[in-house]
Image (cartoon, rainbow, N blue to C red; front, side):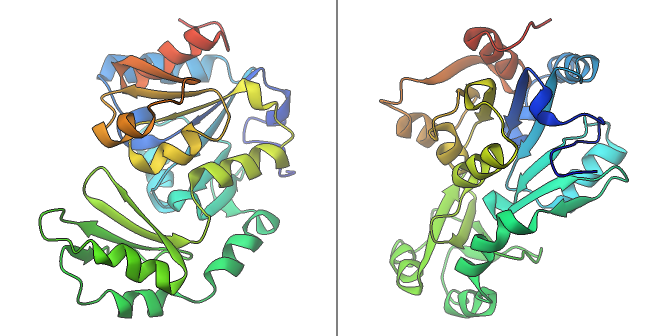
Length: 258
């Protein structure tokens, strides 16, 4: 399988429309009926619809959701808040695309231990148990968090990202969902005006404002909606989660919908 091909057996560049979607609160959001309508529509139109997951989740979570919980399999993944760029193999593995991750790896180096040591005594942060390759992630308590931590991380040469008022990520400088998604879109030779980016929290901001058709689904967090003020090309959907994605597909006239 080439990197341009997908688990569907056809190159994703041959599709009419590609959905690049966040998971929690977006693709996984809304009612059971809304999710089933979206998922069944994608599966019934695999010849014309491509699917990319753009998520803060790690590959293991994605594999579990698809293999055990019936989520449609994506063809490519931008995971770990943009620090993983991968394709999904025919045997159900998520395999990083080396050439697309070289710059990310270079920017991060072997910085995990240094970051963890620098933040070990910061109030309001609890280290997440999952080990990530090119980021360090914490659970975040806004009531006790020390704002000077952002400056500390900047002095170390990295970016910080707070999302959903409960997650705090330390990322390689300049790396997030948006830049990594654009890198993948270019690599796959996709038409940018046929790729819909969908999200609902601040860790989706960079991909919603990277120039692709985009939607903040209903139920999006207030800081994201506030940050999107002035970004008139981003559709604000009223329906929550999965239904909000379909609302945006109709609004942008990207593909016939149910």
